[in-house]
Image (cartoon, rainbow, N blue to C red):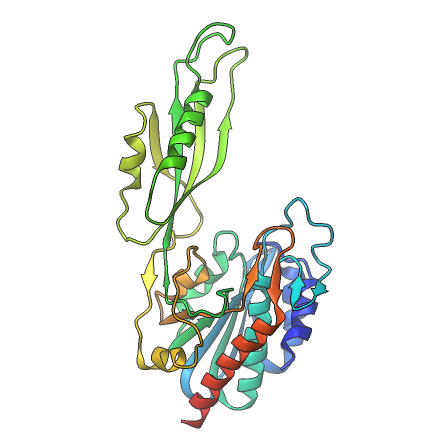
Amino acid sequence: MNIEGLLLELLRIPSPMGEENEKIAFLENYLSDYSPEIEKVSDSTANIWCRSEGKGPHIVFCAHMDTVPPAPGWNNPYSPLLDGDNIIALGSADMQAGLALSIELFKHYSDLGANLTLLLTCDEEGWCRGINHALNRLEGDLCFIPEPSSEAPVLKAPGRSLYEVTITARGGHATEPGTSALVEASNLILNLEKLEVDGSLAILSLHSDSLGLTHPQEAKLILDRHHYNESDNIKETLLSLSDSISISDYERPTPSPKPYSTPETDLVKKFLSYCTKEQETTTSVGDFNFVATKMPTVILGPEGGNWHAPGEWVSRSSIDRVSQIYVEFMNEILSS
């Protein structure tokens, strides 16, 4: 398996979420011996499926092809830099290393006659449109998603809710005392920063405008909420902070990901026996939230850092160690 060689090639191909066609074309050719099926999601992107109908339990390898766009501060985001044990490039950890790992594992064990599906998705960093497009036909006994996890298996993830908060104020002439929705929104933000919540609460955007020389009468916040409980009372908490706000669910093109905990089936337990670290819980959401509604889902990926930021890196030796865990598990599956 040539995981690092493939990874370096993938890192040189831009694939911001929703615009993965160049990488899709490369991978369609790379997987040409395995009858790849291109599942169109939109004009600018698609999923890739490969199937190997072999022996043993049906194992799915799922990875997303996209990255976030380059953040300010990147000099050469698509020119991977080898720095000792690390590979530095946009998407190296999240999750081009896991993408390369999934592809090479599928190729290797498909050649050995394993019962496998490879699903490469688009738009995971956006609205998870790819996995939602694929979900109705996805099946298997166990799915592996090699998102970065510092070599620790992850069987549990939070859900995500997005809210639009509208702050209103009386306004008034800007040269006279008045009430500003922008000031009220700023005070609300400061109070939100002090809240202790299970999971996370992040402000993604703030917008306000004035009608001429007037104190702004309206401001809007977009709040991101990650939570581990199916029922979440954050709306009530927010409404208690101010009398001048209203809250609505932010309209999104795909369903909100729900929190989940993967059951430890015999197959999952067998895989965990090869892992070298204790289970951890991820703090984020992704394709895995949706896959987990269809089958047991395990995240196990290499160590990395600076995700979504300049200087993103992944550990080469960690990729090797994670690869070995998958190899040992798959070898046992084939020999059973």
